[in-house]
Length: 187
Image (cartoon, rainbow, N blue to C red; front, top):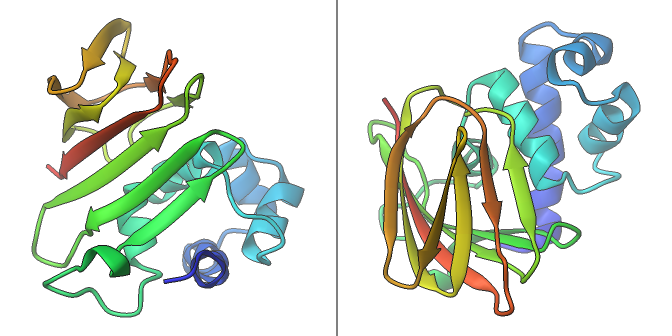
């Protein structure tokens, strides 16, 4: 799937979610803390949403990022070949996200691959679904993960697992990029 195709479908899905709740752009702006103009541009596909923006919208709509991105795929498949996995890139943040095993109706778990460039720093204000479980397994490199007020430095082979109730932060101290797998399990 090409990134441009994902962005077009994502823009339409964001507009559908807002309209489905009967919210105006102003109301969504107030609920998400994102400016009305940015929301409007994202819904029209004029901008590709950042990781932070999608995280905030997912929280407002009660979805994980994987759930949202899976909703813009044509049809979820039982077998997801590497070349067909949805890849979403936030170049400004130095973040690449691959939906390895996307969410599917009736299943609670999904697998995501994340890659952060050296120096990348992503912060999430809160979980899209409170109480969701995450297992983060570092494949290559080093990452600092802050869950609430506790920071963990993980190296290749390390795994951190937790239930997500509050803010999180992923930071790649470098000098090399980091690649990690995240197993997300919904409550």
